[in-house]
Amino acid sequence: MSVELNYLDTGGDGVPLVVVHGLFGSADNWRSHVKAWEATRRVIAVDLRNHGRSPHVAGMGYDAMAEDLLHLLDRLEVPRAHLLGHSMGGKVVISLARLAPERVASLIVGDIAPVAYGHDHDTVFAGLRRLEEGKPANRREADELLGEHVKERAVRLFLATNLERAEEGGLRLRLGLDEIQEDYETIMGPVAGEGAFSGPTLVLRGAHSPYVTDAMLPALREVLPEAEVVTLEAGHWLHAEQPEAFRDEVNRFLGQR
Image (cartoon, rainbow, N blue to C red; front, side, top):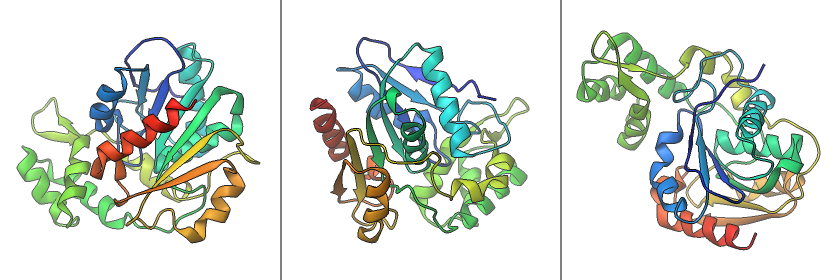
């Protein structure tokens, strides 16, 4: 059963660029990029299930999340789109490209390979659970609670984008944290679908990120044989660390389509 995803649509003509965030992210994280891109094209930024303002439901399988995205394209009467996904969102768009290649004009993947990864979010889950228990009154208190488990300030600031004002006062998480944690094993697993997506593909990776190493490139090219791989001087959150370089590469790639 598909989920009715929350989305931001700039409107306009032509083949749209659909932007899909990563784990614990949301469409809100991409607002500056959307603002830059909307000058020249229609942009649709989505909240995946259990993220942002989208519904909380059980199941974080890539087949289900790709179906959610396809359902949104159908609702918006978008026959084909350029798909851009970062991290978990990258796996979602790769899955969609394998399951429904006729709907994909091109694929842009941000710092992820279509492979299974090990667990590395234990401290993040612990920090978010501490936030839930602590019921912070303001963002300073929220940062202190998160800081008991998450030491990197940049990561805490990113996680704090999931806070919203609660009706009873104070701040609360808008994530479907139970659903995400319950299916974390699936999120860390491989993409959905079979075979290769042979359409135009750009893979942007961070030079200081372990997510798309040279050793992973053969497995990546099995699924994305046409992939152009570009390395940016950044870590995993390359679109936040090197926003202009990231946009320049996306614009260059899309300009050829």
